[in-house]
Length: 295
Ligand code: GDP
Image (cartoon, rainbow, N blue to C red):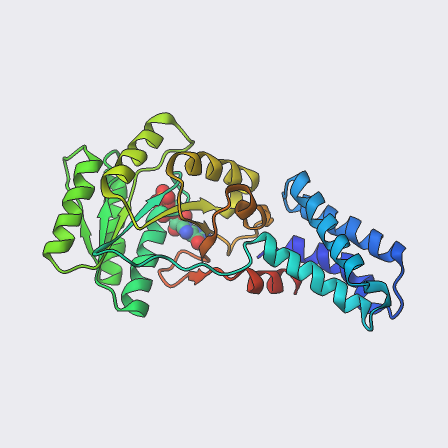
């Protein structure tokens, strides 16, 4: 995960980690390299610039150069800033409501269906919830089929209405069915498209209005870098979603999406997907991620 970014930051901070005496020139050079590493990771220019400016301001404020261990303090400031950039605190999902309704949004291929299964599995096994998965992709029977396979695998019921072309109706019926069968969480998997288009946005917005979910989650493929951030913006403008799910972090992603999505849409990353299996789901902790990035 983020191998290239980790390597570059390691190189950038190497001087500070190794040397006893550190000069203003060292610090400036280091921050320049940190900025370069962030830009290489597909972090946009303004965010990378602000990042190093913030670290520099804090370094000056804490008199880094005259401190006992200037190198380590600088590394800590970079780590704190990375943590802050990714949202600071970990934010959980809202499990209120009876049942809790969770609406999944995102482009086709982002990992929505897989993540719906992972979340259902997590809530069933870790939180003792009774979950109903709902297939609302009325355009691709294969998508409903995929959800049914996932449901079978994890032992969670899947609600679908083959032949019904109205996703709003299907989701409303699913919630009725959940109430009638004693489920306390309903996860609605919606249809995605290959790119943002008006029809998809209006459909998901209609479902959103009709079911008034406790949680609207936006799923995005971390491999898509700045595109991920732009797609997040488009979905957030329409749905004002509650959180981001970053998938495919097991691949060799550059890191730009993880680092910048929070500051662009001001919504927390809540979970990450780290593989195709149902167990490959992790709660997102910004500080742990910063630790991992800095090695
Ligand atoms: P959807 O179209 O948004 O519902 O996307 P899918 O759930 O069908 O996922 C698209 C592809 O990405 C599938 O082949 C999944 O197995 C794969 N996938 C989903 N999440 C992850 C992940 O976290 N890591 C990896 N490596 N693959 C994933």
